Amino acid sequence: MAEKKYRECAGAVIFDRKGRLLVGERKDKPGAWQFPQGGLDSGETPVQAAWREMHEEVGITESQVVLVETIEESMTYDVNGGWLAKEGFAGQRMFWTLFLLKDDVDNPADVCNLETGVNGEPAEFTSVKFSSWDEVIGGIVQFKRACYERLAHLATPIMQANVRSTL
Image (cartoon, rainbow, N blue to C red; front, top):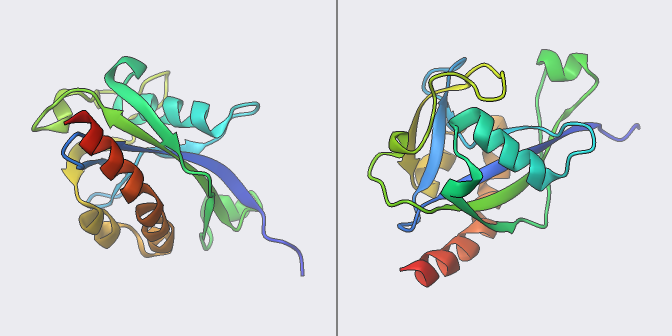
């Protein structure tokens, strides 16, 4: 049996000093909230792609966050059908990078730019909010749930150490 082929993607986990996670509501799927993510461009590292996706999808720039850490372990999820299948992919292989938001804000929309996509990309999120891991995992589409659960397990201790160190 042939090995499954996965599209390589990067995701940005953006959190604040209170440990809240910044997620966006997908324009194409109202009510679906997730982290900024997208495919790696040719020659791009996962960290470079995470910076780019964060900027393109929520308008956050390098001056607004601190790169905390890259999760060493990649995670996959399968997607049935759709454009990924047409391109020969079983799903996506995710590489995650954690970013700490520098500003203390009550509403993440105050530091995001969702008006239009950045770098010529169409806007992908209609709104942003802060959430807990339980809310993020509970609200994510089923086929991504195991990936997000593993991400939470690996990211939580890193986030806690950085939240404590910045208080």
